[in-house]
Image (cartoon, rainbow, N blue to C red; front, side, top):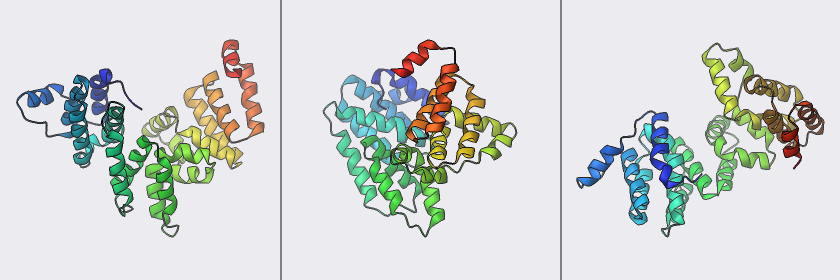
Length: 279
């Protein structure tokens, strides 16, 4: 997830625009030059980026951590805070400052609290564990939720599913994936305009591939075929999509479906791509 620091300004600007605000680097620079620190998380992060680029990594870390600690209430900063910010902080760890230790301390503080009623804290805990390579802790937290509170468990599970999906697939916990994804493909596909665009976004983000694998793993073939049809309708029938669907079938150990996708690959007109797949 780490981003090369030399590309940070452009990428951060794009990300900030995506999450509903504009990146005004000149405001942050003017504040720094006048001796005033930027007061908003996005501008303070811009300031930290420049410090890291100039080699002042210890000072950069302190400002990055300020952004994490003080940016929680800024809705426009939420997406950047749990992605780009954490990535930048971790990138400093290899440059001689205890960035990973600082993040782990914050993760452990959340782990020691009762956070089930605070969805922001739950999402922070999951994001920190992901960047620290400790997502098993998030899974353990999810598993600790009371089975008696199904509504709360489902709500929290859906929130942290993006952080858990890979682990759930590795552990073949397919029922959890289907439960937490809660995708009604038929309803989305039938919805006019906005629903159609939503389906396209879901497919192109890759969100349906784990659902497809889970359907195969649970031997829900009709569901799996329906999901595959939605994927092919949006993405088109081509080698790359066939390959992704074949990989899902392989991981789910669905030999019949593996054979079907392999035959489609063989029937495609890209010999070079078939050779690449065999390797």
